[in-house]
Length: 286
Image 1 (spheres, rainbow, N blue to C red):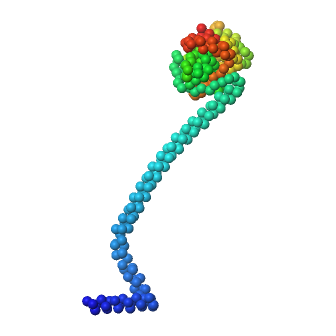
Image 2 (image 1 turned 90 degrees about the vertical axis):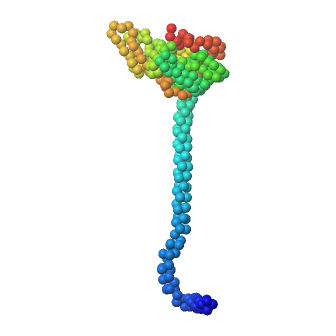
Image 3 (image 1 turned 30 degrees about the vertical axis):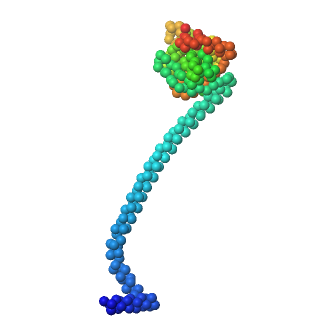
């Protein structure tokens, strides 16, 4: 046994010396590496397979987590984008209201609508400003384009606005083109007003702009109200049937412009009248 070991050691040393100095075993080493490659591959297969599976599942898990995170981030960004669009629209509406207030030249206050009631028998809205902000009964209310209505009831923090299309509302108006005066009555329909008792030969035509006449002392002169959309003159009838469409966006307004046009003494008198169902005669149907 000892002789075999000594012989193997001597042969090994001789082979290493030959390979180190003369490189006689390079071809043998190459041949052996080719022959032993399948065996080496089989021996390392469990370890390499385990590593591949671990990396594959780890990468797939990371991708799932990354996709989930990206979906959440995308959803959040879409929600923020929607809010941004809403804020841009609101900003534009507020700018329009401010531009309108400069045109009016009066003391104004912007309020937001907090409740809407637009059924045919009761067309009114609730705003988030009340008597603590100086709001008074009978106060004119506008949007960026035209007259919306008037305040009929005030609380400390809210106020009720009767729209000009309510069947109880009547507004003195005049044709901007020629000064012809009439009364714009609410019809209960959000996009229609009626001008009664206009003679058949009245100088009024489709497209005429109706503005406040200032009669009644509630609304000052010159505020846009509506545009005439229909004039029907029937032979033998004393009066024409005249319809007008409000210029204010009553069905989609989000903000309102409250205007101070009366003296403080008159405002105080208006506050004493706390009867929302019976506005002043100048702005309600008799």
